[in-house]
Length: 147
Image 1 (cartoon, rainbow, N blue to C red):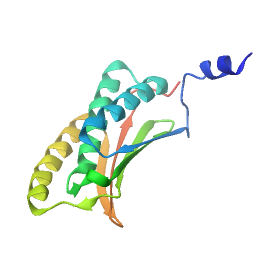
Image 2 (image 1 turned 30 degrees about the horizontal axis):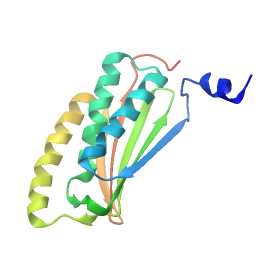
Image 3 (image 1 turned 90 degrees about the horizontal axis):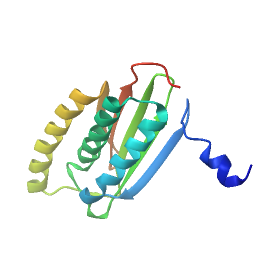
């Protein structure tokens, strides 16, 4: 079998697999994170309803990481990790400056809305700040076993 055929035959992700996506921290590029989340969700075996929940949740996860900062010079890094019972996704904003006072007020409202949306879509979620970086994470459990 040729190299291309070998790659084409691996269309699922399994326990311990990890995919990392890094892109400039711009709101218009969050669509990339949603597309990757859809592709990974399909390869992990989530059904269409779970896939849609995750696609929306990843967008909110990115917005949550961006809130409270001036991300014009930062990068978002998403890490998708497969376990036997769930998909764990973390989004880290690095290299961004703290928000100005007016940006901070807007960011607090946006973060609160993102938290509410995440609570409706995923099983667990949270966020923390460490060493100037903001990290938001979520966990979506599957209804059935991974394939």
